[in-house]
Length: 220
Image (cartoon, rainbow, N blue to C red; front, side):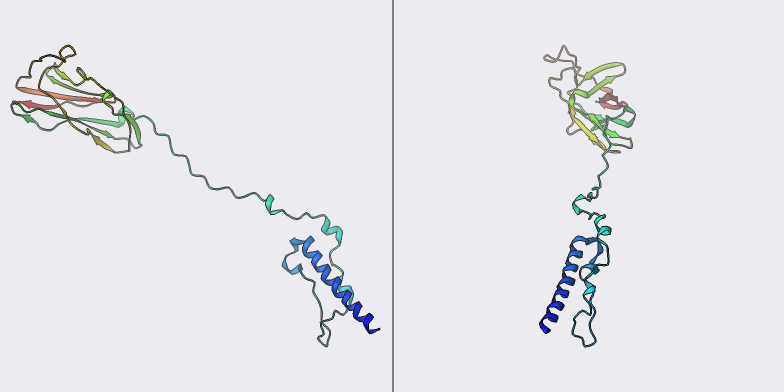
């Protein structure tokens, strides 16, 4: 008789534990508190449940069957932040460019060759692109209305070089261009040319289609 009672108690414990495992597996949304069944102890503290009825789940199977567990794999991942696209850099506008003709001196003694340069500035509020190659550059020296010399008259090679100018950036010629103090023309590139007389001359430069103001210098 004693062995039968003990067997009945063990069966009740197994039912309670089995019921707890089933609830933990099939009702994961219940949380941690539902993972194990609650038990009561006897007055003697033996830890034996007072009644096998404690193994009966409180929730009906029909209530739990209607709810579907959430699959973590189906949860969409949060979208990664995207950086804003950089604004497209466009060609420099003529009104945003300042071109300056530069000579290394204001006055040149006999035999001194003027050294000519260009300064280019982006006066706009945005960066822009401009072709600063030799194909877009021109140096012109005049005396009154008489054109004495052009850098393009006898230019053998020319090229293009597109660069980006930051807002407010100023750039200058990498190396100056030397004027040999002679009159140029496309017909006299390989022959002797007349030399410039003492007096005042003006230099203007063009780059990227933008013309500078004239700068005056003197030949002695």
